[in-house]
Structures are given as C-alpha cells and as structure tokens.
Length: 142
Image 1: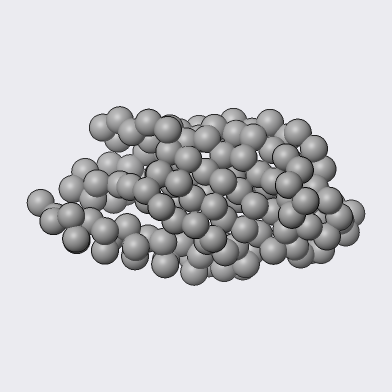
Image 2: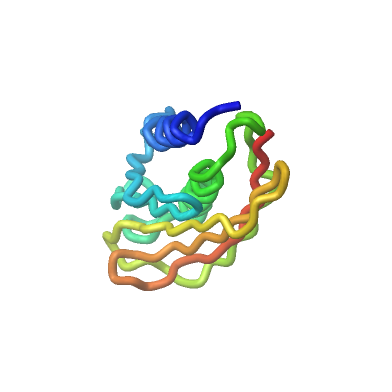
C-alpha cells in the first residue's frame, strides 16, 4: 500500500505528464488548476483547430472535455486500486459558439468515485465567460 505522500507524488506525476502526452502537447493544452477532484484546463486559441478560422470544431471541444474529465478522475485517485484507465462514456451538449479568437477553458469536477468508475462533469467557457458546452464523463481506472 502506498503512503499518502506516495499517493500525492503519483497524482502530481499524472498532472505533469498529461499535457506532455503526444496528443495533448500537439493541441497545446495547459493545466491551469489541479486540485483533488477539481481541474481546469485551457486551450489557447489556434486557427487551425476551428471550422472557419474563428469557431472551434466540436471535436476539439470534445477532446478538451474528455481530457479535463479524465484528469479530474486522476486528480484524487487511489493508486492502490490500479492505474489502467479509459473513458467509458461521454455526453456533450454544445450550447454556443465561442467568441472569435478566444481561448477555451474547461472546468471538470469528479462528482462521485466508485470502486473503479469515476463520474465527472465538465463545462467549457470561452475567454469572455460564455458557456460553449456542458458534459458528463464516466471514467474507469482499475
């Protein structure tokens, strides 16, 4: 069994690794907040991730939400339970278009932790504070 200090070290290692994974680093995602069960990730504006030079593609928004939800799941994980992970399901409601040229901010919260499943909610806003999307994620770590 890992000590609480070792658990914290493992959680911090995940926080540092996440934005450096090949896909996340290619997007340029930044972890702005990483607290137990509470994460905020920012996607700096990039024209090449848009549909028309100003509005983000829905798949980019979904990627940000999936990643932030997964990171929220890891942020308070008990590593004695395992370290193999996958998204089980994600539900996204697109609520608006981001302000042209805006960064995206995704806040994710782990709402409930079961033996292997973690249930998260995510909300994406643009730099002006406008809600772009809401969603729920079920994540498994075993």
